[in-house]
Length: 154
Image (cartoon, rainbow, N blue to C red):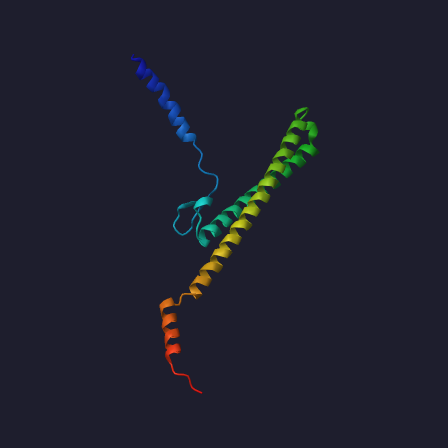
């Protein structure tokens, strides 16, 4: 066979595996109104930030559930350590490390949710303030002009 063709056949499966294993951005949440994915850097409206906050709340709940699962597993390792022999200490320390990791992730997700809720509230406050200032500046000047042109009464 031709050497270029053999190289092509060797490279093609590797590229397809790389494409299949490519990871999406971890900071993504679904926009519930339009079902499009909004990343943290693309969030501009209060609704986008509220969706991100909900995403982080769900992530925190998932991490808390994993903490509970690992705590139950740790209790099993401690109560029945004789079942696991020498490997029991390894299982126990690995589970403790997982618990620490999931607790840190839970805390980080809760902080991110609070941050995005604060941004959403600030954006809503700004939108509300802008809607209250919707009077036309040209009309304001006309009113001032009418007031200044009226004769004064003594």
